[in-house]
Each structure stands twice: as structure tokens, then as C-alpha cells.
Image (tube, rainbow, N blue to C red; front, top):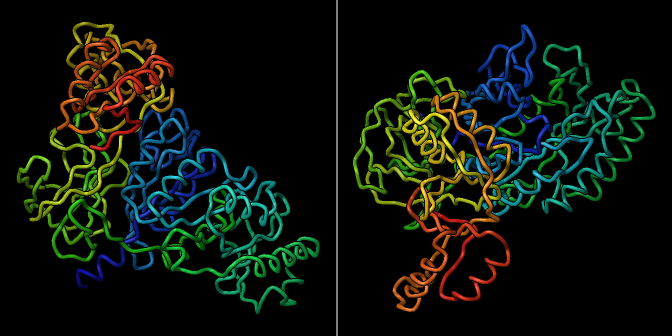
Length: 532
């Protein structure tokens, strides 16, 4: 197989949703259909049941939520699937934002009983900014659900993307009888007792085929036919070019927990989802099929194996082919590094890779060298677009309860900030570090991980901080701007800190103070996010 053929058979995508829409369940079903696992796990496993593969961290299994993105790779239908399972909970949205920079498309899950929810809207904004192609799966159709046309209308209104129905349900809730596929004019009869959950698949000649009257309840069949006629008349057919531009989303219906419609979704998704897309660097656009290897770090995970205190940098391969043992340039430092043991990831399980291609996500051992957004290149000096740090909304000071564990606490805070689990600020006026997070649940996770993985008992105490802003002189060569910066530092010393990279951050106590400094120091910018 040629290099181009290997690259074009890659499908790298993320699954995103609001909490409890069924994201982790769908992920498990995909793995099962791909033969990557022998038993689909359960988010809240009972005795004798297996936990989900993607929720591998102890706290994820205890809480029944995903708190960190997991990378899962497996072959399916002649393609190599690289699936990123992201946290659904809004308190861990930064990890999801980073994951979306490493994929070529996204599968958006929607709870058909609730419709479009807040976190789905936020994630869709990120997809829209990056023009990421999305596919929509209306989940939980075997429970009481909203009208399918109303669901699609809500997606169009709220998420701002045109819907193209690829399947349509017949009934819902206890009366859910199956789905009709516009792709190949087949009906999939819902049979929850089936081993695969896909039910009986039968070929028909259209929505008016009299065979349908024999197989389905007349009441629900009439509703379906009315909805199908409206959908075909009012909604456009699927257009792959529009889909690849992010303007149109194919829509499917089914039930992840019953396994119904999942294989059909996976088959259809693999057929139309994009192969690795070009990536934008500051110097030029990099095509996936170029021969030379390039990649960038989008995530760092500490302690995937707590016994060995390891760190893994997740690298999205952007172009060419990577071979185990080859030397590449770490662009930020200019150092040549030898990647001796790249790994394919299955959550926290790893297998040594001999080679990888554009679109793949590999794990490499991190001795403390790598940072999020770092570029690796075989020869050329390239800098892929950085991944921004977002202004945190909740703050806490960290106090050590055992003075003998100071080193462990510092190491834990540093490593967790480097992997993006939290933002770490060092106040200019004192020794007590400040943590900044997007959601308060992150504090529980950080405290748990510091104590569990680093053995440093600590307590968190709320800080009187409203928001954080990165302070930047509009023109670093402007003498007046530099004077403003020096005056600002002197006046607000007790509200200033440095982030993990030494950038100046204003920890403003309230909105009025922020408005005041913006007015008093016009030569300075107070940014809500910072790109490395």
C-alpha cells in the first residue's frame, strides 16, 4: 500500500455531547463493532460487569463521568479509526477544546428527549470556528423522544448547521419500532433482544412500499410517512461537499444502550467522513500526503501508569510517515529527539508502534520536554497554530498539610498544569500557588489526583478572584506601552501572577477593577485567552 493510500484510509474524529447524552456508551459500541474489545463496558459497572474502556481513571469509574480525553484506535471496514472520546461535563470543556484541534471531524450526540443542550452549543462553537465537519446522532430513541423533525429544526436554529436526514425513526419510546434509511432504502426493525441490536434489515422500494404496512403498526407508520414526506420536501439531500465545509450535518437516529442504529451509523460515517485534512502552520499549509513527517502535541497525560509516574505526550501526526526510532526536530527548542518507543493508545493501554501515518494519534514518552502546542518535524521548521489557554472562572489557593511532601505537591501541580488539567499561577507577592479552572468539579479531580498519584495531602481554599487576564503590551517596541506596563506592575503588584510559562497575568478581584485598568492603561491588552 502506498503512503497516500495509507493516509487516505485514516478517519480521525471526536465524539462530543452534553453530559448523559450517551457518549461513552456509543464509544464502547464502536470499539465492540471494531473488534477492539470483547465486551462493551458500562459507565457505572456493577458486580461482574466491565467498566468502560475509555473511562480508565479511578475517579472516572467512581463518579461515572469522563474527566479526560481518551484516544482509542482500531481498524474497521478497511479504514484505521482514531477515535477521541472527550469529557462531556462542562467543567472539563478545555480538554475537549484541545481534542477538537487534533481531529478532522466530530460526531455530535443529542439526547432525543432533551434536544440541543448547553454544552453541545459551546462545543459546536468550537467546531464552527475550525469549520469541523459534524455528524449528528439522535440517541435514546427507545425512550420517550421529541418529534424528529422538531429535533432537526432545533439543530438548525440553535447550532446553525443545515440538517440532512440519513435515517428517520418509526415510533419512539416503548413504541419505537425501527428506522428507515434513506441511504439505501432499507428498514431496520428494532429488536432489543438481538445480540447486535441492529435488528432485522429489510430492503424496500421507498417509503410507500406496501411491505411496510405488514411490518409496522399503522399509527406509527402513518406518522413516519408524513414526517418522511415533509423531510424529503423541505430538507436538502445530503451533499458531501457541504458536509466537508461544515455547512451541513447528516443526521441519524437510534439507541446506543440498545445498540440499535450504531453499526449503521459507524458504516455510514466511515464512508463519508474526511481522511486527514491539511493543517495550517504559521509558515504555510501542510498537506497530509506530504512525505516528510510533521506533528503537534495536543495533550499531555501524567500517570497513565501510576506505578511508574510516567508522562505521555499525545501527538497528532499531520503529514507523512513516522517510523519508530527516527530523529525529529522539537521545533520550540531546536533540539533533535529520537522517538524510540511511540505507542498506539487504547485509553491507558499501549502497544509499541513501528510506524504511523498522517491522521494517527501516537503517544510518546515525555521526560518533561514537551508542552501543549509543540511542533515536531522531520526536517522543516514549522509552527502549527497554537492551542489557546482559556481564562479560568474559578480560583483556589493550595496549602500543603504535610510539609515533608512539598516536592511532591510542586511536581503534581506542575505536571497537572502542563497536561492542561488546571492553570497554575504563581503570585508575584507571595509563595502560595493559585489554581484556576473552568469548572469547580475540576478542583475535586485535581485534589484527588494530587493525593492519589503524588501522595501529597493538601487543602484548597477559595481565592477572592473574579477573573484572570493575560497582560500584554500592544506594541512591545513602544516606549509608552512599556512605561504603562511598568506602572501597572507597580500599582497592582498584589493582584499579579505569572502562569506556568512566565507570562504576566492579572488576577482581577471584580469587574469594576478590570474596567478601570483597561481605561487607565490604554497601551495594554487584557486578554481572555492566551496562545502559546
